[in-house]
Structure formats: structure tokens, C-alpha cells
Amino acid sequence: MAKSKKQEELEQQVGELTQDLQRTRADFENYRKRVEQEKEMARGSGRAGAIMKLLPIVDNIERAIAHLPEELKGNTWAISVVNLQKNLSKSLGDMGVERIEAGTGTAFDPDLHDAIQFDEGAEGEHEVIAEELQPGYKVDGIVMRPSMVKVTRQ
Image (cartoon, rainbow, N blue to C red; front, side, top):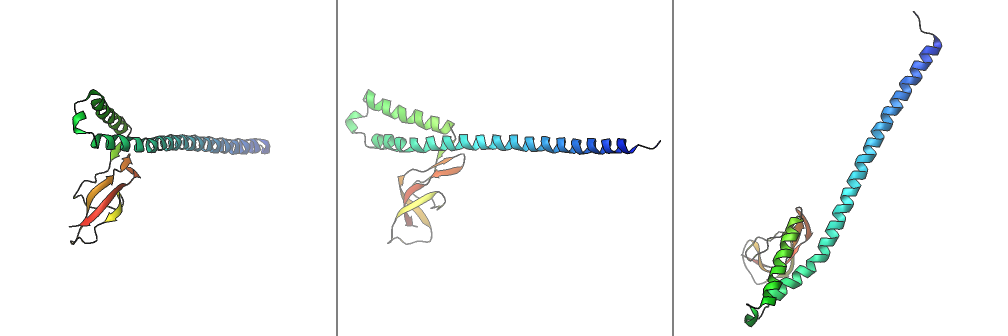
């Protein structure tokens, strides 16, 4: 039985509409995924901004602890400041923040360390860290702030 011209036109329209619907569904799915990615990036950016604002506070607390007078070592207030620093470090760690290794003798890595002083008189083949002047941090493996270091040769 031959299809009438009207039936063929209707089948063609149904086919075109079906393709349009499939494209619309695919476009919507891509849109939904893109919006989710943008939300995640915004959350990550906000978290990174908050962490960057906390790092100077961490630095100041650590400097205060490093210069704690000997006569205050057992003082309850001083112990509270030390505990504050430990709690803050733990909280930052829970947020994916890790301190960049920059101890004396560590190999200098320009991706992780910012050399702000260099021992010109030093001799040797390898550049190593002589002193960490300001700690650096990574968040989820991405450098947020490089360590400021003094570099020497070994």
C-alpha cells in the first residue's frame, strides 16, 4: 500500500521535530553541565579568596609564637595562642591547604619558591634554600602563594 503524500509529509515533520527535540535536550544537558561547572568554579574562587585573606593572619600568629619570650612559655594565654595556631592550621588543612616545603637545604623550585635574596658568594652546582622568609601554600595542589626564600648554592 502506497503512502499518501500527506502521510509522507507528516512523517517527515515528525522526524524533523524528533531531531529538534533531541538537539534541544542535548543543548539543555550541556547548559546544565556548564552552569554546574561555573558554580563550582565560583565556589572554588570564593574559597581561594577567603584562604588568601587568612594567610597573613596565620603568618602573624606564627611570628608571635616564634618570638614568644622565654618567661611566657608556660603562660596560659601564650599556650592558647599556640593552640589557636594549631587549630587554624588543622582547619586550613581540612580545606585542602598545605604548606609548601621550603626548609633549609630543600632544592629551590621556581614553581613553588620565590627567591627574594640570593647568596652571591656561594659556590656549588645546585640552588638550595638557605632560609624561608615567608611560608608558601598550595590549595588542592595549586600554588596559591609561593614561599619567599633566600637561596644559596651547594
